[in-house]
Amino acid sequence: MNWIFLAVGAQLLLAVVAVIDKYIVSDDRVSIRPFVYAFYTCLIAGAWIIVYVVGLLPIPAIGGLSIPSFSNIEHPTLVVVAFSFLAAYSFFFALVSMFTALRQADASDVVPVIGATSAIVTFALGHYFLESMAFVGNMFAGMALLVVGTFLVSKFHFTIRTATMAIHSGIFFAIHYVVIKGLFEITSFDNAFFWSRVAFMVFAVSLLLVPSYWCKIREETAGTSKKTGGLILFNKILAGVSTILILKATELGDVAIVQALGGVQYVFILIIGIVITFTRCFGGKCEIYPQESILQKAIFVAIITLGFLVLFV
Image 1: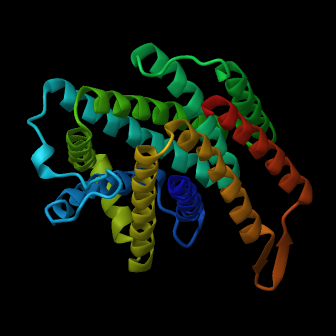
Image 2 (image 1 turned 90 degrees about the horizontal axis):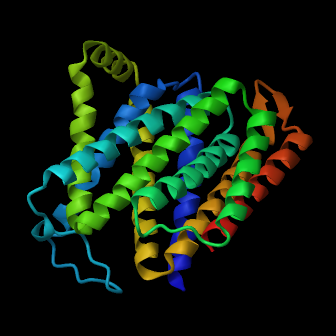
């Protein structure tokens, strides 16, 4: 059952990534625009194509899982190209909305709403477009819990704009996941991963061809310190490692349980958020995190986490 530890470890890393994302897009000392941060996130996500170079080394497969290899890459069909760019497009705009929401609200509120929305829309789109995703007996109960949890978070902790951004992000992440799943079904994993990473980088670079985008990205980049740049790179490396861990856990174990463990991420985020913000000291003045807010967050996260468990297990 080592794959469970891989999945839980991946969710812990994703929780750390979300908290750092919140800091990067909202702290006045860093404060990078969501659009520009999404640009670099998309670019770095595409750069994970470097794993194919590692695949050239004589590294044996472990537990039936091997490093992607150039030998498994095929000339892309028009469908593969279209799916790859749709995956990049949906991923980028999901990031823009997520970072915008994180700029306005706590990660412990934003990320569960995005995850719940994404789970609901993924099931709906997956059932319609993918034969492998069928309705199950517990699906409606799980979705009901996700909807209730999302509504409670949106009502008590969000402005209308923030709720809209979080839900919009969840919808586009769902589109991204369904497209990636479809890509894996029409071709091999190595081939799909390679061309989707290429599409990520091409899409990100193509944004520089728009004069207003180029100016925005250039100005933000010039004003970003090396320390902030290093933090962004470190955070995206964590995100990439967590993705690989989830893929390994999926290969070695039960995919339904791996998906259900996604709810654990929200628990980690809540714990990290409480630890960081329980006592905030600025210039000797401490701000105590409201206990009623902590209780609300705990209840809402519990409802959404339960929804994931019911939906996927």
